[in-house]
Image 1 (spheres, helix red, strand yellow):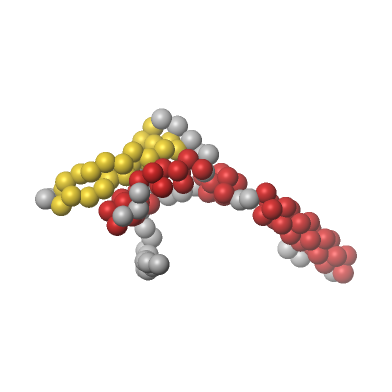
Image 2: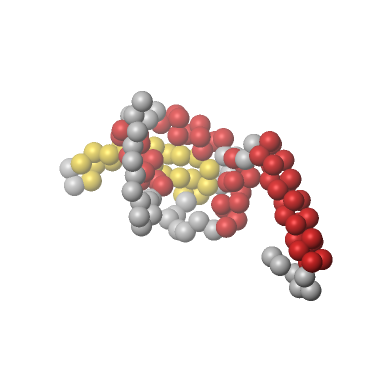
Length: 117
């Protein structure tokens, strides 16, 4: 088994990281299948480029037919991705946890004169 340690103290560019994975030996189809499994309307376009005499894999992300430009991920994007990744069992656990939290909050509100959340 091989392990890669990434120290991304100031962040990481997803498309550049995926290109590095392809150059390290990950099959492009593996990345394409992973993105397709998210069901967020995205697809990858993987090509080879030469920049300053150095050859590398280049990964472009297309969302809903348009090239996705670099930007900070918004909460709605993150939520959409998480909804598609979470298994039904995890959804049930999340629902039970939310119900338990609501119960504890209502107990707390009954014990004190003000809501605690």
